Image 1: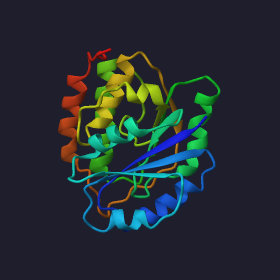
Image 2 (image 1 turned 45 degrees about the horizontal axis):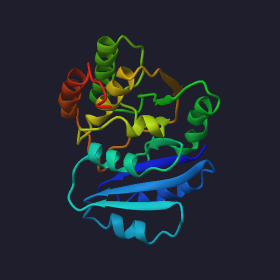
Image 3 (image 1 turned 180 degrees about the vertical axis):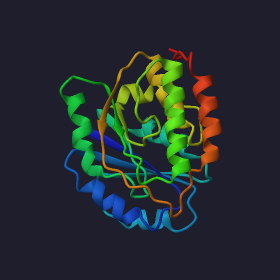
Image 4 (image 1 turned 90 degrees about the vertical axis):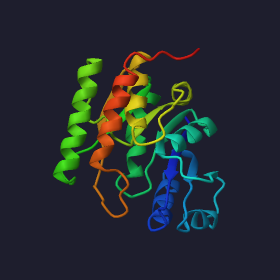
Length: 223
């Protein structure tokens, strides 16, 4: 199966070269779709210097938010499977093969990587745990980490989600819609180290996340 990695990027010049190198070193990666979301710090210039036929660069001239960048990436993906990758080095692409296996084996269509949140600051950890609890309460699930970046799924599922959220609330929208479509979310532990340099997510992002969970709790696709 071919894996498309979707990487939304906004002002990540300090880490972009490192994360791209790590991704390209993973044998299962078919393509890396970098969606530059209005960066102004030299990120796009750094990316354009990297020579690889696996890299596809898409640009938002203005910053639209992570959700908009994810949708742009999903729409452009050509692999059988897609996974979302942050650019800030919190996640390890070495986990791709582990997450991909249940899909390859026909045991799952959607797989979430579950983080240990021990390295997170307590307010962020509590926020993550709370929105996961709300997700489980609304949807009758037993998810361990709704907010994880590593959401891997078949491409046709991703492209059917009709994503509307522009910000970090896209994590709640994706999860709600995946569950409303009747897909079971397979969960596996992954490596994770919280970082706070240039961190864009804040505890206040929990508010639109809860709103998205409520908004999409009864969602149905348009077709």
